[in-house]
Length: 232
Picture (cartoon, rainbow, N blue to C red):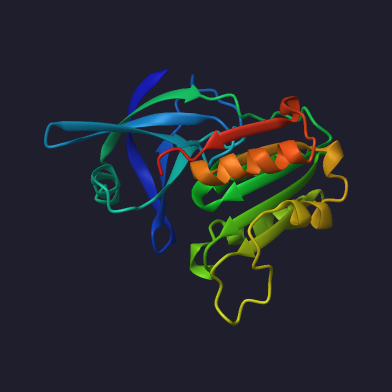
């Protein structure tokens, strides 16, 4: 499906991350974890990027994507957008989806790769699924953590959702984990890892290392769903 819509809400998530919300057309249906392409037109120059939806299919009034603002040309065009500016949206695309197929899942995210995981967590919470979810988020610093308040609220509503944060460049005041996601962390935090389906999203090097780790842990490909960071 392809449609043009004005942005109706812009949410500043962190110092360099914004979410952009658009009215959801009635005919636009998608699954948690899917992505769209967004085309912007600035003074006659058109540019397109792909973004995982950070909204959930259960949210009927809007769709949302979330972007890390990197200073590149497209990113600057997006950063300059104001409510009422339009974008051409195509989709949905992607096969890294979740509709309740598994009893237990592990979501491994790096940085802005949390966006499909947020969609999956929102969907599972709103649908009151019994799926046991462990979300492991790896970020650089405390300032880079995204959707923390939303996840705290979801945890209150969903007793089956657990969130584990690790920071690789944390300040001295950070009392949590400082490791990169690794085999020993998975074994320690997820002793039942062999019973879970894994979803992985982040920068390509992170996704590659996660795939190597999961293969070393004998997780079959049929139980791994991955997406290299879209719109990075």
